[in-house]
Image (spheres, rainbow, N blue to C red):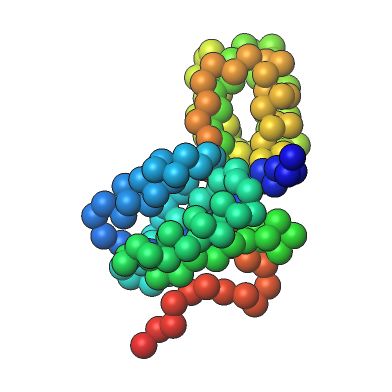
Length: 173
């Protein structure tokens, strides 16, 4: 019996034209093929009319090759780049509302400061904290905040760029 290829977490950075429906086209590509889309973040780039999609997907090596080929077939896709874990900077954004009282609020603020997070809202019963960092850092931060009581949270997917001089910016004419 042949051995199954391992499934790994992969990050793709995709430059696309900023046109209506591009996110639908990209997600449909993943849906039709049954790939596990972990996160998708879309944002404008330094070039007018071009967006960067940061896609995190759990897939085999073969599936990543197929995904890349299929993305290249979309007319609105300018460039696809697979980012390697050891040569990329990846960050997530987290907003978390933590239950507080007058007694434990200083502890919550101190814990946020240790993680270089910012308090962005304070009410008598809670604080809202903004934190950025790697997935592991945010996981550790949430475990600590859970001891105080998490009331609500929102978390983005990865934003990622290559380290150093490598760039996938389109050439400016």
